[in-house]
Image 1 (cartoon, rainbow, N blue to C red):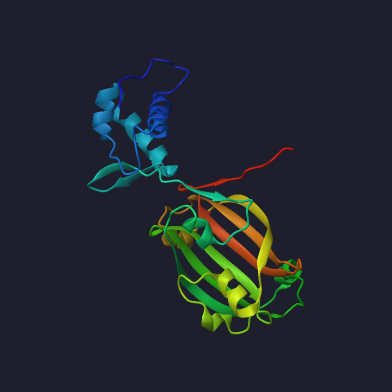
Image 2 (cartoon, helix red, strand yellow):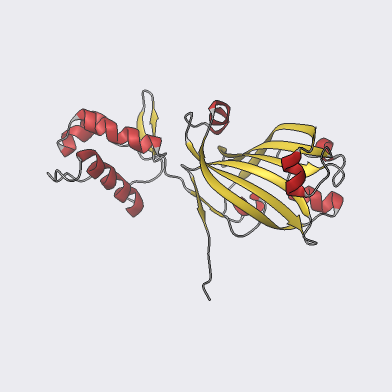
Length: 245
């Protein structure tokens, strides 16, 4: 890393150091997994206090840019995974198309009765039987999201006994029940992970995450699945391609 932080009172030293580190990541000079200098080394190199260096690294860690390992140091943790939130596709196909290795762990499978919210979203009668599948999504063995799918049991009886880890839910729906999901209506917002979610995603409690709620439809425009997804914002980046004309 190059020397120098300008003596500009309008821009605090920690912001200047943060900006320089981010620029070196963007340029490729610093890559995912690279080790950063220690707080003492940064302080000496840039002629700033150790407290300022520590504050900078703490901010970068909170934003998911670096990972601080006890006894080892601070490492660049900038492995962004791009996900298209416009094109409707299964998680497995989406990741495989990018050359990544997806995997899924089933956290729980249960049966419930549709409450007012689910009945409204899926156009069901109140109290209808539902199958609920909660799964942890991983990419290259790194947990990235927690998903929960709600499906009417009458459309896919026995699904709860059929699906296992790493199975594609959409492939099972198509192969076993003739249900092909072709589109979805999706809503997104920023939220903070609670203690249980943070443990599963291996992030700090109250880490910024992206919460998605989606209703998926078949080719007859029939509501089939309501799902929620809590995704880490530190390593996942959503994008879209729009044509204006």
